Amino acid sequence: MEKIDRKIKDGIILHLMKTGDRFKTNYIAINILLDLKREDVTKNSLTSLVLRRGTSKYPTMKDISIKLEDMYGATFDADVDKLGDRLVMQFVMDSISNDYTLNEEDVLLDGLELISDAILNPVLENDIFKEEYVEQEKDTLKEIINSKINDKGSYAQERAVEEMYKDEPYGIYKFGYVEDLENITPETLYEHYLKILESGEFHIYISGSFDDDKVFELLNNKFSKVNRNYVDKNEKLEKEFIKKDNPNEVIEHQNVTQGKLVLGYKLDSQSLKDDFYKMTVYSAILGGTASSKLFNNVREKKSLAYTIRSQYIKHKGAMFASAGIELENYDLAKECILKEINDMRIGEITEEELNAAKVNLVTRYKSLNDSQLALIGWSIGQKLLGGDEDLNVAIDKINEITIQDVVEVANRLHLDTTYYLTA
Image (cartoon, rainbow, N blue to C red; front, side):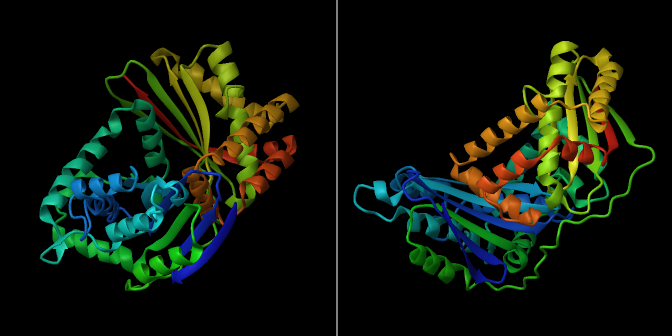
């Protein structure tokens, strides 16, 4: 795959990922990076929902659907996510490659027109967002936020993050807060939208088979007209670590039949980029695979968990071990999880465990090559981490990790928060 980066304007970068005939589709993803702020997060989510409702040329969702059908059933959507202390507003479009159209239509350029206009030329009413759309999407967002509690495992993970980072941007819920919705009007939301255009960091990804110059010309014409007051915020991910003498313990009660236990650790790290591969292997050995320590020893041998896993958050240097357990097994399950984590600190890791983790990770990385969206996600994730390594380089670095490397990071992990959702 050939990768080319072209600058359109300060903070607006076009990333061309030329895959030749490897895929029968073209993929467009416009990622807008924003500061993760409590006062803005709900407006960010609502903006993404309103922008997908229509453009000046296609003012309704029905109009957009008809256009997508004309583009051989293309898809278009918008969402938000958080990567470390940044919020990502993402607009995506998936369409057939021009090579497979019946009459040599340029579906990619049609898609770029549509997705760009969704962001730059939305439906307006009296020079602000259409009130009907704003009110309808406020109801939609309210349902999204309230549905957080339905999946107890995801809810427990989110609550653990909130408690662990209550004084940091990462503790903010990505979709926002219901109590903020009442005070948002079409006027205030449109003012916020203009600030996004002015100061957001745009990464426009195109994956597939296309003409570079045509793509750049169209996007340059669209985005070069945007009024900008952009300040580069790509600081290195180097953080001061403060160890807690007394880790938090949070117990929350709900009407549940299964307990949800989450142990949150922070990594004593000055460079998350340098520690990324060591911690990735560490988490795979601990609880990232079906041959991991937590799965084999806590779930299979001792039957103390229905579900159990570990997860490393690379943009925060955080590791979470989470389990779904019988309510009466809290103390024993916690003790057994802590033992596995401590065993890794003292080097209780076999070559078989190391190799199994590496094989699993390499297989997982190779599978990213089968998805254009996954490749885009990998690329932007690496950029925010401070690098731009392709998957082959990543695989080589995974294979270089030793038991000593894993033990070294294991001893720099410190328990910060224990969260337990119980009856």
